[in-house]
Length: 273
Ligand SMILES: NC(=O)c1ccc[n+]([C@@H]2O[C@H](COP(=O)([O-])OP(=O)(O)OC[C@H]3O[C@@H](n4cnc5c(N)ncnc54)[C@H](OP(=O)(O)O)[C@@H]3O)[C@@H](O)[C@H]2O)c1
Image 1 (cartoon, helix red, strand yellow):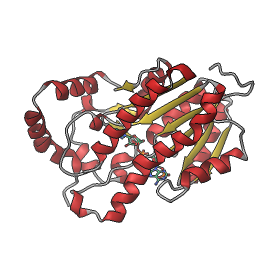
Image 2: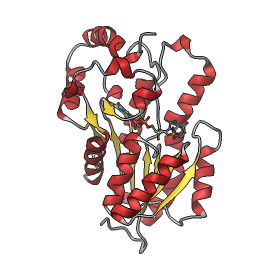
Image 3: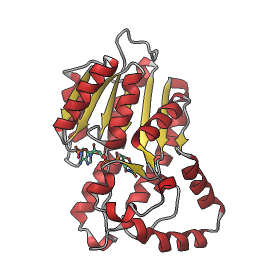
């Protein structure tokens, strides 16, 4: 059981809790004695997850259906949450997706919504919950970034790696700023993970050809990420193969790394029509 200054059980808000890594992280927090606030667009999977968390761990879950690409979504989620619980002690900025195709294949509206979900929402949500965490001297924040934030840019999914690099740097700075306030901040950087991600962005056929050593389950990623948060690791890459890929990307000359990405990114960036 986690210790904080509240008499009540701590509450963690998880975005993108209806599937994959978000649902798995919600399980990790519940296992450790937290209550949950679950948010995503689809309600039914969150209802089922809430029932599971109650049965398995005795956790109470508050469900907020919301679309993070819509203006004002973060403030609205928190306003609705305040009516259900008085405190938010943890935040998992996890909601995300991939936008396939080269930059000019998507219009500005699609890119704008992507940036809203992937960048603006994590930054805004963090800003909105942080003052209370600092005041209470207790907080836990995970920003779900990606191994893509550690390797050079690739053809297709043009903004994806850039948003994940941003989240890594953001988490590092915040981790340092929060050290004396009892708030732990960690960027979790998974590699290929079994979830709905590649079905949603229609790259399943392509990524299924990748070797099994490149994959982790959402549960493995979440368990490893939760442990890294408790150790206050500013940046965490789960899985040895993923760690090795990140180290390699740092060690080899950038021109080689770009060539490698150019050759290999076609394999997992888009299904052939
Ligand atoms: N899977 C991988 O290989 C992988 C690797 C590295 C990093 N990641 C990162 O891990 C995070 C979770 O992805 P995942 O693999 O668990 O994918 P997933 O199974 O597709 O889950 C994505 C979650 O994000 C939510 N979401 C998407 N768009 C949203 C929106 N506009 N508003 C609110 N919620 C939204 C989805 O819920 P609804 O559809 O119900 O709204 C869902 O709960 C993402 O940030 C992703 O970039 C994934």
